Image (cartoon, rainbow, N blue to C red; front, side):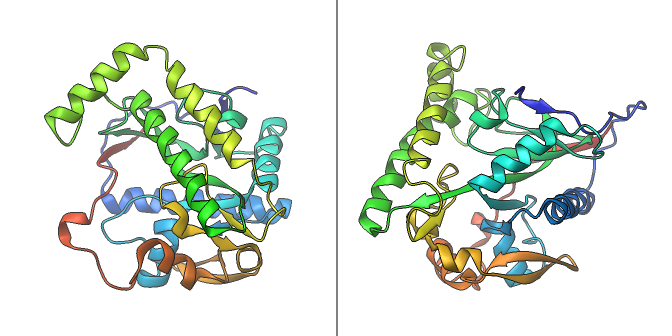
Length: 283
């Protein structure tokens, strides 16, 4: 499979009008609604996860300062989605991309995008389209200690992967910029990044979905072992409100959010309220 599945035609008229934060969120919500419709038509399971689920519970929509959407799917449904889109070219308005320029099935997660809206993130050197993130949900060990070890392994490779594809000209400190440039002078063709990606996927598949009593979005690995969920709590879903629309969430959302954020109903300090720092414009 190629790394991009084109399901919408790019607009012919090019403009460079930057979108406001509210306009970006509206476009992302439209992508999420299209994804929900696709899952319903194909009988695929999904749930809101991460900050998107937190936003639904705490704000009934986007976290005010945030600008992304994350969903999770059991790996078998995740792969069905990729395969269906690959073989069905009659769909419109949707396209799957990965951020690492590799075949979709080899990526650690994929993005569902609207090719009508272009974006450039500060810390990502590859321009792309406005997106929602779709994460595969994999099995996790029944042992909490074994799960923590698994996440530590993924975190190690995720840092290599991030360094390989990061924008070497941007960084929160001068030292970070230097480290990125030094790393990428060695990893010119992203071979270390691709090797790390392969390792992450192998680790994620060590415990196939359904073979244990727990699951999590291991390939993302951003939240660590705190996101570990009982599979029954994940598969038993409830509906939550997000920007006036109803979406699926795992029934164990309270313990899931507590594991990730602790006291998740308390707002974080102002200095920790960050977004993707991206510019978006319609073509």
